[in-house]
Length: 224
Image (cartoon, rainbow, N blue to C red; front, side):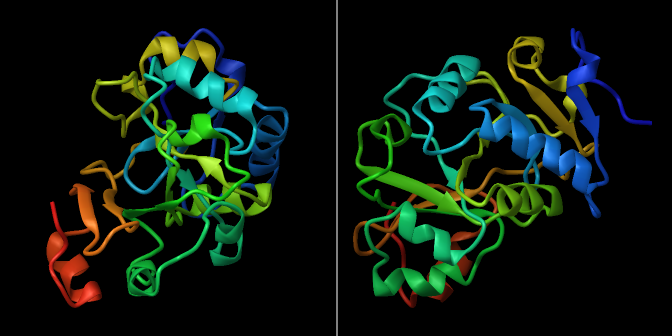
């Protein structure tokens, strides 16, 4: 049986969804929230994330507020396919293309942000972290939305990430517009974050994709 987040005040804002075969109506409802500058909790590969339209300053402000996240810390985004990357990044260096073969899944690649990307999303760094989702629900959500969405973890800043919605902080549950419940996720480390704006690329955070796999893709050792 699916469990609602503890102390959740609004059960009508929680939708249960099959993690392997997401219901189209529930995906449509979640996309509607994104289109209205809303914020939702949704499953990524191993952890739950906070989703919002990446090009909506209003929605991005809400993500920072929900997470109690300092504004100098960037938010990563998910894209539905490689074609959408052109809307988000300035350019992709040739050396980074083998790294993109590690998608979909647990590696976030940092590139120079495109001109239309809100500075709030980048934390004022001029850089944007991107990944392509592997989880069927996340993939269906970003594909049907048709553009990039935020995918920062669904926890208060500095607190542990959540793979079981029973442990979702009730303050987050009270402030988002929708919670897409796909059950208990795999957990584990978050995505590896790799800065591809420099050579050799620099590992900002080692996570789901190992240093060895990155080295094999690059043909050289990444820096720390």
